[in-house]
Length: 189
Image (cartoon, rainbow, N blue to C red; front, top):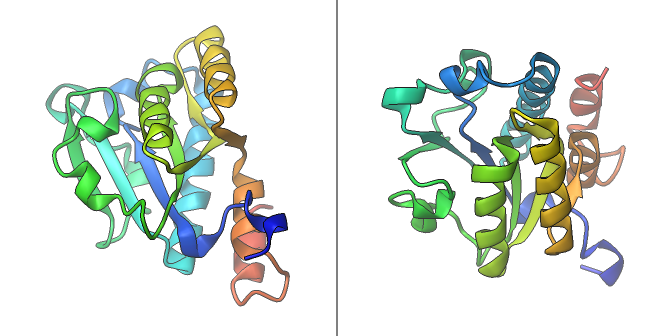
């Protein structure tokens, strides 16, 4: 890999982490923000399946907050790893560190909610462990806009890459000659 691409997402080095997009939690989110999170998370999930990128999803206290939103859950495959948690950072979930392969796939792309709690704590801890963390900024949200903006600012200042779904997808593809370019680019229309 040349130095020009070291800061770009690489499908062969990526893992997708979908954090707590759960039924009861989504009811507290602004409608437009939730629609964006759902849409962009689904685009990343569909591309992950095509590009063989591992996916982990977490559910925060599903007994109280419900299961993953059905319109997102339908894009998980039998290869998706699901972990339940009560802690805010995903790193506290039983089995999380065994499932995330930072040595061979050190780029972790995060989607989910809430930006300033579970997403932020997970991103900061993964970054501290040496992972290259990318936030799909259009695929995370919080109940309050000011908390979301503050989380983005904090993560950015800490050296976490704030990106967007389309940039991540095209970085994974790298070339219009890629065998999945037409399928993935068509999903963006």
